[in-house]
Length: 488
Image (cartoon, rainbow, N blue to C red; front, side):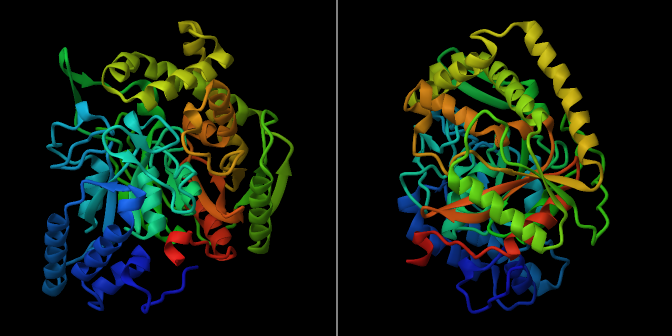
């Protein structure tokens, strides 16, 4: 559990601590925002994590927050606390650019539902986090905003697609960041930068956004999101601590029937004090883990046992391997109709990355999977969801690696088709989860060759509290890892 340290610089303090300090009038929101802006000025020119930062707007919001405190009105859980939003998520007055110039010409007229939830909780929106073009890489580089670096090692990816979010958190620019995840895009960046990322159950946080459009030489085109985006993608938070991730998830839990998979009310909380049983899955037999990855799992197991969890090692769990294969079918086939737009307005890196990624998926399913294979993939997905929920029941969670490798070298996905295929294989823990729609959290548990290495905890549907409790147990027993940028 994080120990409160009022003497720490404001940018170093947790969102939970800052919200309490603002509420008690120990510090002002203006002071907190100024501290974060100073940290951004110090670190962001090198890292390239946040874009479209508008200090005057943020400070005006902070002054309003301070006036609300002085007036004694009821305050939200994140009142006056800085939070970043991602460039692929609608925020009123900001372009939802996806890192693509053709999508950056029209400011959003409305907030996405998750951004509305953050505003209503009192958060001060401070900067937009960078991502790859179209948010379809495990790296965060695009032709519009450039490259985001990892504060642990600039030669390694900060993750993607929420790499700007994870890099900015690790550097202390904000204590919480909004992200989204269809193939690890919250969990993997969090792991690469040594922070916490939680992917909620599909539907818990509303994914509703206003309609999206692209300006192309042929005219303005509306972008309709395919089935996998609707059924597998989620909005969720990244944070520096488990407690902050829990707080942000509570705030972002937004029953909303505009979302095709939205739920009408917040899920009931599981009983307190019941420790989940933990089943450990180290691999699926298709790729060998880096020794640092195995050590991270071993360390997490020891910490969970110390916390009183019952832990068992599973030799294999075939349904995860099958889910990862189905992800490579459904997600890429759903993205295939977007390829003409990508080729028309995307940058060279995203075109090359998708070319190699489609080749990797083609090695599994064939170059052009049939409609019959696609339909059977969706049908089999439903069976796997039932099978996994029955396995987990009400008292079990899974512990897996985040990836078979530590953070990839920058641009590994465009180094060649062979390396791109290795990445797809190594990321099975990231891709198996979204296709099933289950919640999962990544939390740091080890340090290997100067890089943070995390583990993933997977729960049953709407069992976020269970996996967060286990993540807290790991965090409580793990030394705090800080990147060189923060400690120098």
